Each structure stands twice: as structure tokens, then as C-alpha cells.
Amino acid sequence: MTTKEEGYRGNCIGVKGAAISFEKNSFDLLRLYAAFAVMFLHFTSFYFMYAEKSNPAIVGIRESVLCFHGVIILFVMSGFLNAASYDKTENGKVFLKKKLVRLYPELWVCTLVNLCVVSILVWELLDGGMIVWLITQFFGISITPSCLEPFGTGSVNGSLWTVFVELQLYVVTAFGYKYLKRLSVCKWVIVLAMALAANLVTEYITLGLPEVIQKAIGRTFIPYVIWYLAGVFCYCQREVLLPLLKKYCVLLLILYGALYRIDFLKNGFYCGMITSVLFPFVVIGAAYALPKIRLKKDISYGMFLYHWIVINVFVHFDIYKKLHWAVALLIFVAVSVILGWLSTILVGEVVKNYCKNRQKAVQ
Image (cartoon, rainbow, N blue to C red; front, side):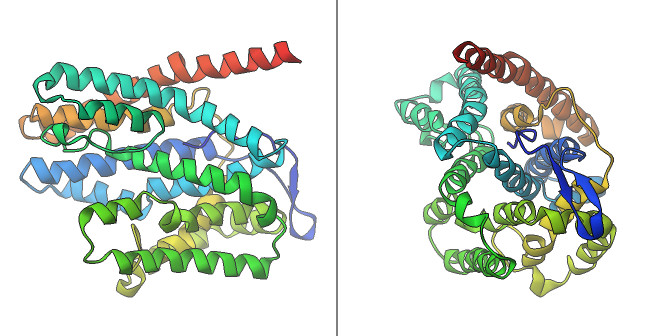
């Protein structure tokens, strides 16, 4: 969901004269890992549900991606890179326009593909609720019409809630970043503590509430803003933090691994508080500790959009039961990667080039 760095190209001067180039990072690699992690998490979730058997390898994969959670990586990187992008943008309006152009076209085409899939496989289930679904999908709001609840996983594209949350965080950045960038470290600590409290309180208040209300609360940015703001904080304090996070990344990783299993630290909405507090700094540190890696094609967003459609097809045709888990996983990954690549090439890059050419023509 996050794009490559869009503006800040200077050096980040660190402590004692050390310098770290902002663009010498592995965000491309981390973004790709995050997309795969989300895919593996969803694949394993429905494997346990529909294969009706356990498997040590599947358990291991699931535990690994839960520890190094793809969604949290995406939000942390988004906060860091969106702050960098805003710094080179004229104003919040231009920033929002740029982000929406990046996000919406591939989402719209994915929605049409999804519509074609359900129209072919379960056309007899469709009713007028599909019109509401199309309208909400146009704005990036993830819902499932009641007519499609019997199909596949029961969710048309369950991973799209993160897109809607990301849209809200774009608005937060457009209107709030100019204030956040001026905060002192002490004030930042207060802001991050409040964001963590919001996450913990959300877990508490949603207990016992009807599922529809839980989902509504879970579609707001409030429970997840801690990860996004941690990324913004790392960018705003980059001159000091980046050299330190790069230097001590391995130690942070070991500390995170040691604390991850402590029960009381597992409290929190969507993930444990130790993940909310420590893991964002591991992510940013890893981005600069790893070698600089640039991918020619960033297909992560396309993979993120289409993998749930593949899972729905798997469930519809009972693939989880019919194939060995490794074969099913290989097919799942291959199809998701191909669809992600096609989305990037045929939609994402076409729109990007069109916008570039139009901007040149205006200039």
C-alpha cells in the first residue's frame, strides 16, 4: 500500500557526524515481504478452517508471520514514507490527490475482476445488494453483501479493510503532519502513548459488543494509528534515530523476540502491546540495516488486492481438501503474484505514466 519514497532524497545526518542516505534502504524488500506475510496469514487461517486437519509446517508459517506481521509493517512504512512524501508536496490537497491516484485505479479494476468472478461462479446468488457493494468499493469501503455470504470465505475481499484505514491515515497526514513535524521528542512520547492507549482501550471496549459494532470500530484508523505514527516519528526524528536503529537493529530484534511470548504483553487490539511498541522500530531499523535493494516492479499492492479472490476460489472449489498443502500454497502464491504483476503493469504503471505525461504537458 505504500509506494517508493517520493521526495526526500537528502542525507540524514546522524549522531557524531555519521550520515545515512535516506534512499539507501530496503523498503522495497520489506514491502514485498509484508505482502507475502499477509497472504500466508490468510492462507493458513482458512487452511485450518477448511482442511479440517492440522499441520506443523502450516502452524510454523502462521506463527512466523504473526510475529513479523505484514499489516503492521505496511502501516509503519506508510507512516515513514508518507511523511517523507508530504515534505516535498506543496500542500495537503496535492498530497491527498497523489495518494488517491496511486490507490484507487488498481482497486477499481480489482473490484471489476471480483465482480466477474462471482458472476461466473455464483451468479444465482447475486441480487440488488451488489449495487451497494460496488458503490462502497468505489470509495474503498470493505463490506460484503448478504447475498454473497454463502460464497467462499463469506467475505468478498476481506483484506480491503486496511485500504480504508490507509485512506483515513492519508487524511490524518494531510491535515496533521505539519503539526506533528514540529513536536519535540517529549511531546512525541505523549502522542505515541495516547495512540497505544487508544489501541488497548479499543480491545477492552469491543469485548462483548455485537460483531457488527466490533467490525465498525475495527474499520476506523484509531486502533492502528500507533503503528503509523511510530513511522512518522521515526521520519521526523530521522537525524538521530536512523543511525541508532540501523546500528542496534539486531539487538532490537532479539529483544522483541524475547518479549514477544510474555503473556501480559500480548494484550492489545489486533496484536500485543509489545508488537505495537517495539516492532515498528525493528522495521525501520531493518530497512536501513539491510543492503539497499530496489525492485524494478513493485507488485506488492496488486498481490495484496488479489490474493483474497484466489482464496475465495480455493474455498469454493474445496482446494484445501483436494490438494496437499504445499501444492495448494504454491498455486496460491503463483496465481496471486501473476495477478499482482498484471495489476501493476496494466493498471498501476499505465496510470502513473499518464499522470507523469500530463504533468509534463501542463509544465
